[in-house]
Image (cartoon, rainbow, N blue to C red):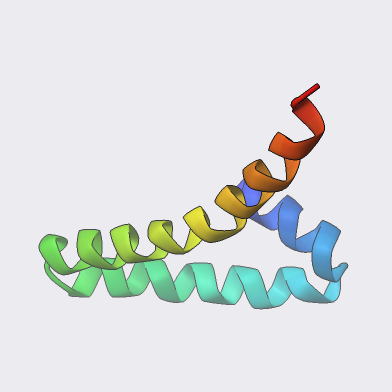
Amino acid sequence: SYIGERCVEYALGQKGIKLYRGLWVVAVAVSAVFSSELVWSIADTVNVFLVIPNTTALYMLNKECNV
């Protein structure tokens, strides 16, 4: 959670930290209530969304690396 909090602080400033912490607490509570299979499915789905900006950045950087 610390790394995510630092990223939110960088992107949104101090006001974003409270929102991030609130969402983090909700995520922990949800993971304690629901089945582990559902929690892992949600985590996998969220991780897929991380592929989009990372792939885009790699594609953009590829143009600079080809000499």
